[in-house]
Length: 187
Image 1 (cartoon, rainbow, N blue to C red):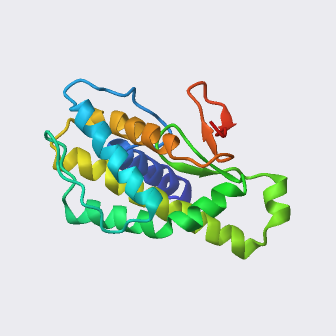
Image 2 (image 1 turned 30 degrees about the vertical axis):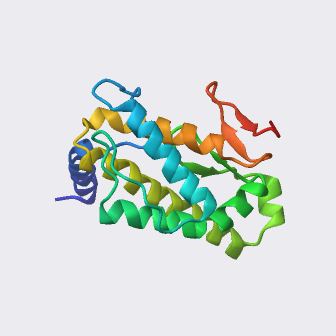
């Protein structure tokens, strides 16, 4: 078999194998049906408050079908609370922002590259990657533990995003509903 055929066959197998993998660049509209929204909002508020305070062992009860007392969820909260100071300092620089999908993103710019060295950028990327991994663990863990339909994942992300935006410090950036990156005001 020629090298070209091997490459084509590999690409076909790769694409066929990836058909079940969640694509992070494609966002499903939030589905709030069959979702205990009030309970989930209360849980999200409690979790984000605990993270903002750096509380590594919060007592957050399960509510109305929203299950959070699982080892992987508690560990994600613990890790997020432990890194909240470092993440907050990085958000203070203006080189990162909260995106509507419930994750934190880096704003790569000339100013960022000029103000940091390669090692610092690597550490920042690792910080964001670890934070987002813990957020995914939290979101997917709640959906799975609570037996919510898979389409509820977008709604869970959106609810946590809203709870997090309420607790952002003035000057921190976030993506608004129009998709623009804006700064939190002093309010």
